[in-house]
Amino acid sequence: MKILVVSDAWYPQINGVVNTITRTTTCLEALGHQVIMLTPDKFKTVPCPTYPEIRLSVFPKKGVKNFLDNQYFDAIHIATEGPLGIATRNYAIKKKLKFTTAFHTKFPDYIKARIGLPVSISYAFLRWFHKYSDAVLAPTASIIKELKYYRIANPVYWPRGVETEFFIPFSDRKHNKELVYLYVGRIAVEKNIEAFLSLDLEGRKIVVGKGPLLSKLKSAYPEAIFLGEKSKGELPEIYNSADVFVFPSRTDTFGLVLLEAMACGVPVAAFPVAAPIDVIGDSRAGFLSEDLSDAVKGALKIPREVARTHAKSYSWKEATRLFLQHHAEIKTN
Image (cartoon, rainbow, N blue to C red; front, top):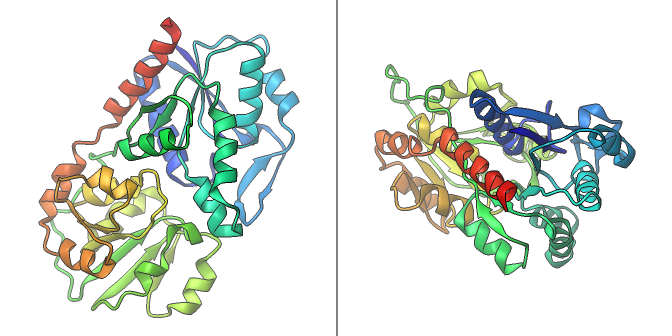
């Protein structure tokens, strides 16, 4: 198939949306499909308010129309609800083209955390955006349930994977002299990182990533080690250095870093909320508790091979198969 993928999130951003699209595209192309990307690098952009690392396309309607006119696609997938996603959605509806959308980010919760806007307003926008989508691809059963609760049209299951040949346990890993607790991800208010940094734990707390909250957290928690943003190639060594991966977010829809950590043999400590509940499930590869300190203590007792074994059950090949299945069903309906 010739597949159009539209995303407002793209390089140089490093996040779950970009990683998911990149891995899915790689798998699709390996299967012989052609993927055409429509991303902000083709448009004039401005910094996103409160998050300047994200660039938003400015009035892309004409550019999107020029891009899409006189092209035929077997499938159209709109990954994000930003300016490019809206312009493509409106074009597809006007031309009576079938398309799918995705729910990667609980941005109603993010916006509420940043500016206090009630989630009901944001979910009203999401209902409008996804209304004519033939399928809303969602990463977990809990998110599907949540989308149905908010009356967002036709959510279907599209999981994630992990590169278990890249994220691996090191056979020569040495035991730490003092325990190491690790967080990897965006440094932003919606990630709830202070719930981790404020814990009274014996050992070292390491934070990897960048974001608008970085300088504030550095000042507030000088005992923590902030490594900044790291490349993909550096992450396996960092994961292997940790005894526990701490995931304090209550708003993530999946959390690819959970799989990366577990693939490296690192058990997870997290709150019992949507992403960890679905990703970890009853595997015993992590410990979930409303008391994050108890979750860390529980995770320390988990054998590293249990975490690794569970991560191996998540395959990008299987995730891509489901992505294709949803689009094939739409094409034949």
